[in-house]
Image (cartoon, rainbow, N blue to C red; front, side, top):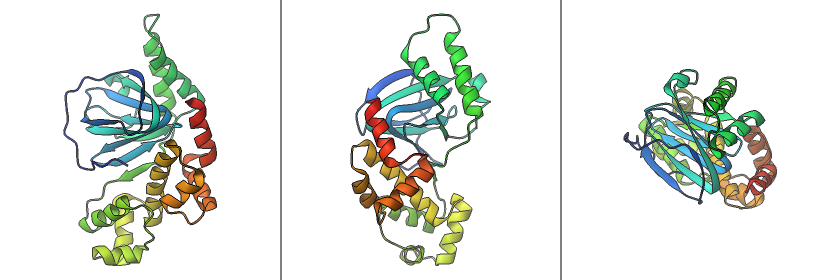
Length: 257
């Protein structure tokens, strides 16, 4: 997972559009753009980090970053990354915060077409971009976001889990470690992060599982490394969040490569 979890400073780096194959672990340092940006991993996976938290996108998701929102990226597995610039006049149709959206078959083909070939007819790219924005407008945000906590006790608790997502610790044990009662810590997870301790840790483990699967590790090895007691429980959790089994997800990654 990304090491940098502090608010990144804005930069004036030029915004790029197009496609490229990036090696496992490739990073784009903190920066911002005057316009909006979509980043799609047609193969592989990517993480986007801002001061609001971490968003992870496997190959069936696309990340959205609004204009002037400082962020960084890291890519996992050999990644076929597609960058799409969204002009300011279209940004207003999308949410005003970083997010992850599901990629429908139409959206995928439009993203690939926009980043694969030069514009042969005036206005063709703009028309494709309008289709992409329309598809995103109708798509629900996906549950692959880990918000950043503000409370010191909650920050300490989540830091321990970031260091070792497989750590076999209960909420009560975590509370004792950071100096908070189980009830207080449970309340903080709900009020600051908008989810239960169990849901937050499951999402964190899914993030790490996506990285391991993109790197070619087996489903069983990934399950054990990320903290599941058996492959079956991992498969159930992964399928609920990602929408397909880890085996099928990994097979599609190999096919796309």
